[in-house]
Amino acid sequence: AKRRGKSRSSTFDTAMRQEALNTLRTQMQLREAIVRQQFEVYYQPIVALGSCRLTGFEALVRWNHPKRGIIGPVEFIALAEETGLIVPIGQFVLREACSQMATWRRRYADAGDVSISINLSGHQLGSPTLVTDIEQVLEDTGLAASAVKLELTESTLIDDPTTATRILGRLRDRGIKLYIDDFGTGYSSLSYLHRFAIDGLKIDKSFVDMVGRDDRKAAIVPSIVGLAHNLGMGVVAEGVETPQQARELTLLDCAEAQGYLYSRPVPRDQAAALIERRILC
Ligand code: C2E
Ligand code: CA
Ligand code: CA
Ligand code: CA
Image (cartoon, rainbow, N blue to C red; front, side):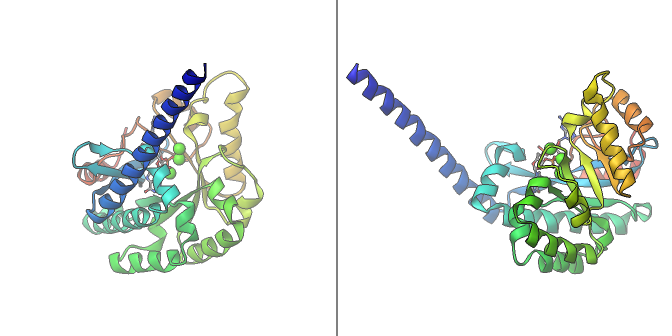
């Protein structure tokens, strides 16, 4: 029994060591990917419900790995957050997405109202140079601050509310808009909607999936939409996949939607084609 116990624990040790090594390897590869500029920005359209008119894009990062091809953020964002590598990655996404949107606005005369939404991690919010970084990007690209929407999760805001209030206040003074991402999934507190002067809410896909059901869960989305309206905020439904969902959300007076129904996140050339189409249903 003693021997078996020992061998089991050494098997466990081996598994743990293997996992630690894997994490370390990915971390090293992530660092290398930053140096070698292997990240790319994909763009997913956001549309006005009802008309399906393109209103903006969300910038979503991808890792173009030399051997493995395109890797989605679920495979590396958590590690990037833990290691702080999300700061240089996020800085790249910010610059690339703003530069691209500035180009599109110059190239397409009727794209003057198309916005760019960018995800901001807690680490970035804590970076002392965030505000000047963003100002520099806007100056270099010539993009109007009003074209930029920053998406923050509830937990990011709750982490360090004092710093968040100060930083976000400065960004908002410049005309940048602030959205709560994955609304309803975090430490929902209504006080911060006012405190951080939030411009809009993005309803998480898990709630959007409940739309049209005939149980109590179906009441969540109308409540969030009503809340946004009452506070004078915008509201975007995420993860819309079916025409039925779009129809229900339109009836609920939800302003905007994003999801595979309209388009998956796509590389910039395909995104440009979506701007040319303009009406996405
Ligand atoms: P998110 O900010 O909630 O972004 C929406 C995610 O939902 C994207 O996944 C998008 O591809 C996916 N999605 C959109 N519509 C649908 C749909 O109809 N059905 C389904 N099943 N999924 C849909 P993605 O691109 O894999 O990104 C995952 C998460 O990674 C993002 O969630 C965000 O939290 C994070 N992320 C992505 N890019 C960045 C970035 O540049 N910076 C930071 N800090 N985080 C990022
Ligand atoms: Ca987002
Ligand atoms: Ca989201
Ligand atoms: Ca999400």
